[in-house]
Image 1 (cartoon, rainbow, N blue to C red):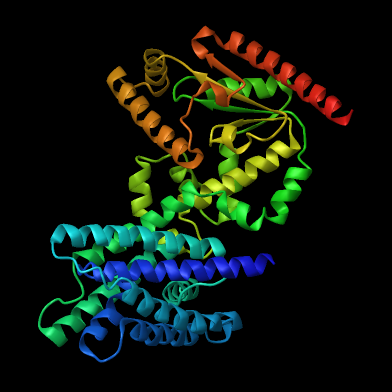
Image 2: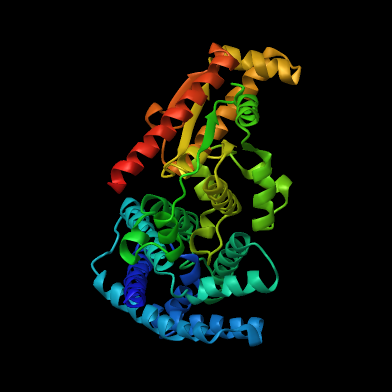
Length: 434
């Protein structure tokens, strides 16, 4: 039943995808990169856009066969009926949108942007179904798997190549650019970006439609209640030193840079690369734009996304074992449902943090102030992007403390909070059993 639902969602996504392509095309500012070659051919030769889309898709499937050879799975042949359905959906939606005849540039631009939103939602829906891929994305997957290239970079190169080839064909046929315009570039940039936004905004839709994955359900049913502490902190507040001393005092394990090594082992990235990527984001919108090509990646997130997921998985394992202090990396959000995890936020006034950083780094106050400002910006943007929350809001933690009150006071307050939280967990457990 679940499989049927996934295929139904995929077909719906395929239709939405075709509707987006048709509206972008009707805007008369060019079409999406993957449709650019079929569109230019349809303007010159006596076949429809949908029919040329089918032929071009079959061509890409043949290329996949040549690239993968014996590694071409039988299920990849599903791309053939999918391509036929997609082609006929495009012709159907082109007829449905026959009333769209822009008579001004503003009208064309509006139709283009609406088409990008629709196509972005279609891409998101297909990825959500997770049963098959269109030949364009599958071709990129075949190239990236065979030659060990990055999926996102390969997808960008593919889109650029399709657009350039379509432009060359246009010049050969018409002596000018016809069918490839600014709308093609806008669609190339926006569609993946919009698909990623839908993915973030509707991240729980998959579980709602198809249910939680078996391992997720098992994790919920058998959640351990061993105590642990996670510390989120402002840069320069002294949170790392306090966390390490707390771990020593309790006889707990302390995890900070150790998580980098664990993540490197599971992702294949170097520890240096993991360290460079984590908790470092200038702007979430720019990040989504830059990594829009990963919107349709087959089980292949952007490197920063993959690192976040890998770190989250490692932290869940550590928390399940318990008796540990985990520092940063959105651990308070990742472990928000762990029943016996004390969430602590450490902060301090800006002047105190600047003074501390200047002393530790042996730099000027001006240098330290800029360092603190930059780190705050990067960490806050990273936290908000992956959690949808603002860092440091009191209702997300059991305890928020100003570290200017003194290291001894902070440690004592955390120990008391840990004890109180453990007592509350035991009380809830007893009441639930009775």
